[in-house]
Length: 319
Image (tube, rainbow, N blue to C red; front, side, top):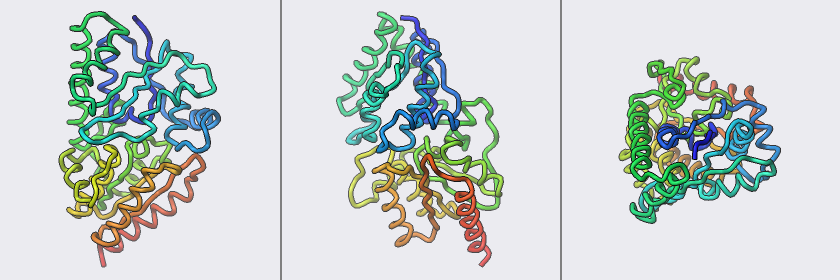
């Protein structure tokens, strides 16, 4: 099978794009990525999505629609579990089904599943099953997978050095930000690094003299350790990373303040919000502000709140 495969620039794109691109290219596919999120993408996704879905899924649908006339197939993996004893968010478990239910004619959806809970043997069997769509050569499939794994490792190494996903994936690797105040931005990568969805928050923070930190800059073992301090272990891997990052900043006081970005209508985000705000009030003197985003978020309101938060942090530092 030789095909043009589209990868939406949304949801897990910010975590795994190098892995998926390397794997697909190694299998002989031509990879096409959708452009950055725009108002048109949001409107297209919102128009076909159920109202109850969270904004990132609606945006994902918009990216699928953007790609539908440009590719032979769409890559929509079913990411069930990425580490022992945890699951991902329910939307990732059913994402291919949600995409197929969209009332728009889409190209064929390629939906390999990733489920480490089934054990490594079945995990890799699923990878080989997917690879057989492109080639009968097990050697070529394994080599393609390893190509993706190497690209992913290099990507994660660059993230730990302080580069953002967009810096790396765009090929414009600017030096890490510098500023006279340090702010940790917690939240899912698709909320934190999509400039449209968060009204360009990262760029605004930097222009206001803030040095920005995100969870990708913290080693995974640290995120896991800090999240493990909760009385009960979290079931969701990606939410655990968000909690781990915020707890790490609170524990080390390595930032002056934390901004938590969460999506309206996301159940997991709402739960994490309570955990973070409770921790910040009871056991930390690092201020935390929650920003809820949806398709109706306005720039004026965000700017006012964030500027006030930064002013408060600067006042604390000199008082």
